[in-house]
Image (cartoon, rainbow, N blue to C red; front, side, top):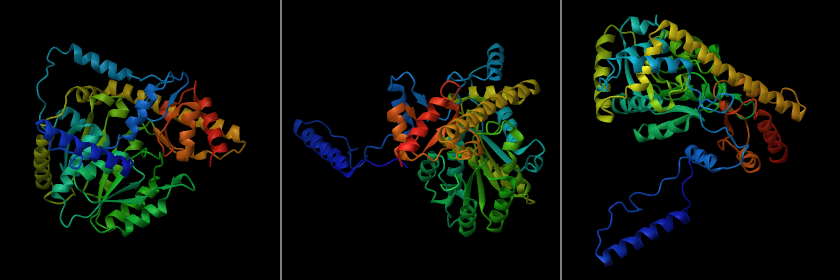
Length: 443
């Protein structure tokens, strides 16, 4: 979580506000009711602050390893070729208009998104016990799910458990909808891999009916995923404790380059008869970062009244969606829908995914090789290649992160997470040398 302003700064802000109020009374103006006591200054979002610092930096060899967006080997944003084709089709469509979408979104998109994550042969789809809503990307899906659970999950409300660490926005989203929050261990600083025993122990000890948030693939920020056998074991634990899985899937196809492989955990839990929900983002795997295309799926349990249950759930989700955004934006969903529903474009999209995932895998290998060449200890950076997806939890300390920023103008988050997409053949050696110096010279 971002740090709060120091107490000294807070007092200074309050004093300034009081003086302004006094001055306002003296000169006859109408002072605000939103004083610093009522609305304290919020800290800057650390990731977007990092982006701003990078943009201001004029150093020629600066490197951005902070933001989670794909870059090509020239460090440029990559518009997927298949997205360009879909865009061209839409522009040529004489029937295209800018009317409102339905509250639940573009049906062709949500139906295709449902099949993509659950599988076209999913028992949940076949038995009509899933409802899907188009959302403002993955963030909107997590929020909609959190809001629904906050309002309708049976009382007494048990906490939602998510991994430590997790995507920074999880904490804010669930706090905003007033879900009680707890965490389970996830990353082992010793092995730089999964702390599976700690994860299992905490989830096993969690109260029955707790909500357990799980990253479907390419865990953010660590890049560490459970194996299939570990997923099976987790499913057994959650089932025994009657816990509710909430999957967050932001990287399907982007993680391994294989859509089916990256959806395996979600599909396994559905096959085990779980009632669950899934947030799904199309930002990373389509490169539609600014178009905010996502989906929220709720799968109810395979009971005899499942279709009635899902109809009730869908009706309440529609009311929540209506009050929050009325209806979702069309463009990104139309792009994704065009590709998802056309076999030839879908095939090309899979090739584009392999291009992105493959380049990131190559950068992992190159970074690890150079680091081990520099320190003369083969195997010392294996976690770089063991991890998967856009991010790597390098193990760099905050002091080392600040050193590479100061010395080499390399920007990454203070917890040592780097975006592998920011590496390319032109800067990977430069980054490796800076990391090696920081580790060698700073404890």
